[in-house]
Image (cartoon, each protein chain N blue to C red):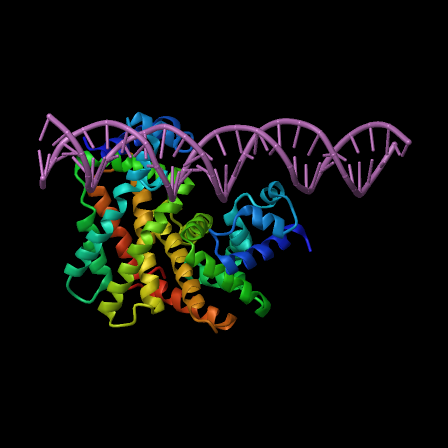
Length: 185
Length: 185
DNA sequence: CGCTAAGCGGCACTCGGTGCCACCCGCCAG
DNA sequence: CTGGCGGGTGGCACCGAGTGCCGCTTAGCG
């Protein structure tokens, strides 16, 4: 097992057992069988052990957006999100643990939203293209941020239901995008 | 001038002059004429010097939401935001500096979004009440987060226009809420 | 005049994060 | 076989944010 993956696994274990703040980097490193200095070579920050692959999604999202036809950004974003967030059943428990940590530890939630900024602007750019307006236009910017906000709500709702599976996630995504498409009035 | 206010003023000065990360708490404290330990008695974190009063808005927002009639959450939220975000001309430069810092320094942006969580849930609760649904319902949650997302976009757009005044801010708020009300499809 | 209570701030400590450098290893050229 | 060479490693010293402790000053009051 590669070092990074082992560290990640061990870290989620320790965080779940004794809490994020209560676990020092020294513990993570020695539990992973490496030196503290080496730990920081694999993860720039203690926070990044938890977030890790969450933003690999960005490249995938951009790609998926590019493949969607039509000039309805909502439909495109919905399809892109559904295609990017396809999880195998075996991945769900780890996903749950990650989401739980991100919701509980404010610092992690904060760091996660920074990651989402890339998504927001990618979505804004895509919407601007389909609407044929400037990407800096307020409507496009609001769209990008609102979509990410909706996705945060989806993950939060999914995490709150202990037995929700991958299909349930898809259903929630659909519901959220319906709301965005139709408006709130 | 009270200590907290003086520290805040001096801090914004120093951050603008030499950057956020490049300014240590020691500098802030001695520039404000207090000891380092005292600084942390007024601000739990270096970050909070910048964000400071930003979340005093929460209590005001909740109050303003409570005063809005009708069962359209978008209209209520729009009115509440307009009433809370009434800035005097003299406050605008300070607001600009704050917004600039929050946009530029990722750590500040992150911390700010944590503050917004209170707004998100307040808005969700209000919407749930007007729609007569559960506050935990996905639609209400998406609404709360989308509204805050839209407000972030508004502040960002306003900040990007160097000569925008308080009226321009109101116009942007209206535009953003129109988008949320009508939907994006 | 003495007592008390509250704000102040020095000191020492923990922990996250970084720069530097010595070390160990496998690899390749001579 | 040997002598360099390069990458991964991790120890060490350092910085800055944040915290607990405690002694000091000072203002207020009986």
